[in-house]
Image (cartoon, rainbow, N blue to C red):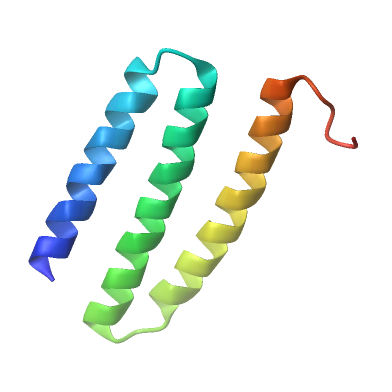
Amino acid sequence: MTVLYCGLLICCFMCLYRIGRGPSAPDRAVAIDILGIVIVGFCGLTGLATGKDFYLNIALAWALLSFIGTIALAKFLEGRGFDE
C-alpha cells in the first residue's frame, strides 16, 4: 500500500508542476483533471486500507464534480456558453 501512496504522491506533484508551468490553458486544464483523478485514487486507497466506505463515497462525489468541472472549463476555453 505504501508503494501505491508514494506513486500517487509523485503523480500529484507532477500534476501540480504542470498546473504551475503549463505552456497553455488546455495543458493546465488536463493537469487539473488528472489531479482530480489522483485524488479519487487517494480516497479509494484510503477506503481500502481503513475498510470504511465513507472514503469511497467521497471518491464518487469528487469524480462526478471533477467531470462536471472539466466539461465546464472545456466549454469556457472553447468560448462557448454553458447552455450551448
